[in-house]
Image (tube, rainbow, N blue to C red; front, top):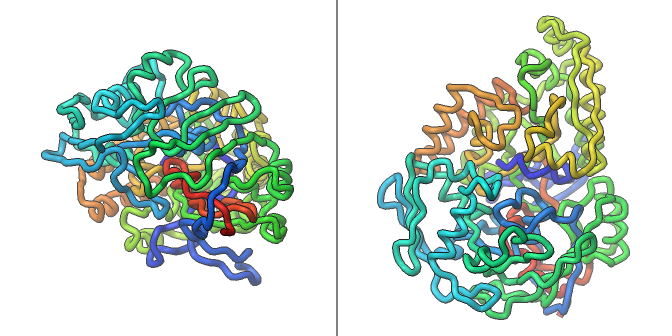
Length: 547
């Protein structure tokens, strides 16, 4: 799911299945008209490049806090690293998993995975990738000293062993389908073992740099200003040989300033377009706003089950008091639909033909202030305090927080806003101490892989992404059954049961879904448009829009 990743602008987030048969809700093209919202169409890629470029400038909404793959848990670092570091497997723009640095894998039994590595792959320093590099890279997540937020992905791993010059065997204590799928995300990243040892504690920072295998290498990190990547001439995948020689990332936190950078051409493009500027950018003539596949949904994560929201009736009441359609207008530029579940439709790419049925079986979100007020009274919660975090990180955060405050007060709850800095807001997702005194946080919950089970693992008892320490024995047992099921269709059915439990108990209150977004200035094209850009080398395909 990846609710973890800071919040990443609730901009245009979520919902996009990968095939036409699965398209629904925020995934489908919308025609303009009364009640339908602005017109948009979802595609996994932009038109292919027609020529080469010397350089492009790409806008990030914040500076990465690290380029250490083991700590990368948010959009800015992963957006950069997608072009620099690679995984054993690869997520494609249409949300499929294919071979990456591993040419194949085998599973001789449910508790053993054997990866055969691609021969002749060069790190940016010119050395050749071996099984030793894979073992060292994966084991870092399991070392408590690393502090990897991905450590929970390795909870069932007993051993990671080199079983040949280009072979790595992983032995599990329990069957774990998700572990293999996450080899296409940060947990499966391969770094040079020698470079890790040499860089030490500076690894992944402006001083320590990184040394991976991707189509671009890290040329410079001018802290507070920019990150520059240069083309890796010895890149193994000739089909993704970069069409642009240099990529410079600039950091613009203010949404208006970021939009102005797009309009002025000082930034050629950027993902997660500020929703407040969508209409202006789409009509500007300075470039194109495209919408792509997304696995995310805007949600409210409950952080304290010992407080006011510990009573299920209060959680249900707050959900019923939310006017999601107006929230979408104010927070997502009108592009999106009310969410029926914590994990978006786009997170169900594992079995897209079944997605519509799963979601049709869920009730539509109810907006009923009278019934909500009655539930609050029954729970004896009238006048009780609920604190929600808000931040200047993105306009959408304050828009949603204010909407939650207004809804809560209408039904008798004393909803208080706690303003925190952008950095402090991000800390809520990685530091339990940062959650003290908070009942709710606005999240952007998403999957890194096409499997919706990834999202629902974060509600399992004790998982890193279970921010409020919610615990339900029936849920945990259902998760374990799903994670041991190798057949994708059967696993999707089992995951649908988790979805129903989550909606019944509401440890997360769903808000809305919307597609991913990217702005491409008139001189460039070729970018992947969807959330797969967090791991797919999207910059390699960008080139000139004209021959």
